[in-house]
Length: 77
Picture 1 (cartoon, rainbow, N blue to C red):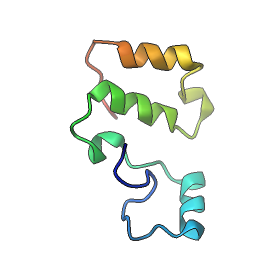
Picture 2 (picture 1 turned 90 degrees about the horizontal axis):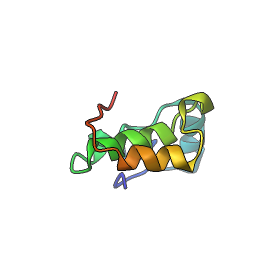
Picture 3 (picture 1 turned 90 degrees about the vertical axis):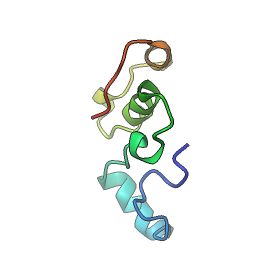
Picture 4 (picture 1 turned 135 degrees about the horizontal axis):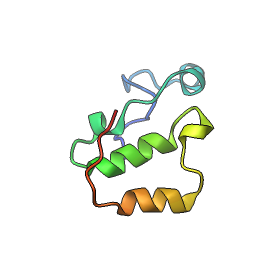
């Protein structure tokens, strides 16, 4: 969906030894930056799924489905 790995700001740096620490430490590139063509609510939902803090993720698939189906405008932080 990103067109490149979510945790690599520069696709040339794809070596696994560099990616694993980034996944554990860094926030991914916001999807809205990589895919401006996607609906904002989709980008926000994917970003929320990738949150480091489990409390900030969806509690279950129903919450994700509701966010994707929501027609109200959503902002991406």
